[in-house]
Length: 382
Image (tube, rainbow, N blue to C red):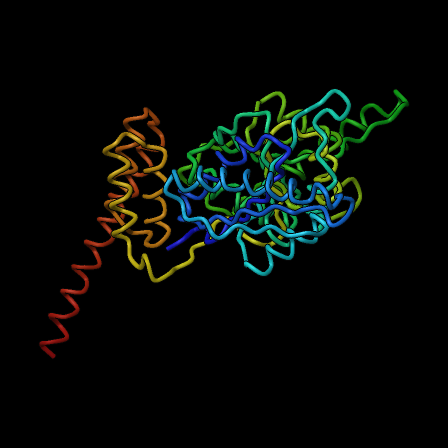
């Protein structure tokens, strides 16, 4: 069983890719993923005299990166090196290989561009049907605090679903943010009317958020819901900077309307300046269960989880036990293991949640066993 079958990792040989590789390792370990390393060579402008030098340099970098992944015990597909337009070539390979995620690196901040990303990443995000995860090269990717802004559209629904899954699997805190437009007037005469209108908008936003979140399983998560007024992209960036979020997850297209923010345009404004790593999604899920011939039951993941637990690698162990629950929501041994881990790391709320869930499952199974026995008894005597 795989959560992420294939991860495409395009490499810029002129950029520091350390954090990009570290993030790829974390995700691939969790998802039992195969990694595809690729590099796009410029289709023109390279003098024939130095073409071999360019190719040899790129090959050397890719070989080193492949060695890093293989040292971590990860499966790496044969390297891909092609000439062409970077965006078109990456999208072509992503489609041909049917990857689940494109994991990009983002250049370091300089005095001219601030946090602004390059045109390749921007165009890739705009055109890709696959989720795109952009890793900041100048910021350590801890994956402990996730922010997901929503506008109640279908793309933001997919984004939140992915944010919830990632928060669960990385044991991260999740903040769900809603932003509404604040009405203002230059005239003091309308102060009372303005306050009433803004109160109405806030109440409307709170009600919509409550209804929207009823469609998601937030049980067992450390999450907060924040509602702010103002310009969406300003409030999103402010939240990231003030709360030091590690990862932003947004949909690339949303709904529009009076005083509504259009998720697509807001996403572009935010990701041009965002200081943390981010993911953009359309309709594909980042984490999705995919069964293969290698792992067809719970046992393998449960054993891996136990080995990680015994070695003290609790974060990775949590991921394995959560995979077991994804396969079978009533896998009681995994529930008790999760309760045990959260007790050890002093997360009392989650320890109690998984312990109670395991007990409820036992009661349910016990009731079903008794019911079957009674049914069998009376059926056999008729």
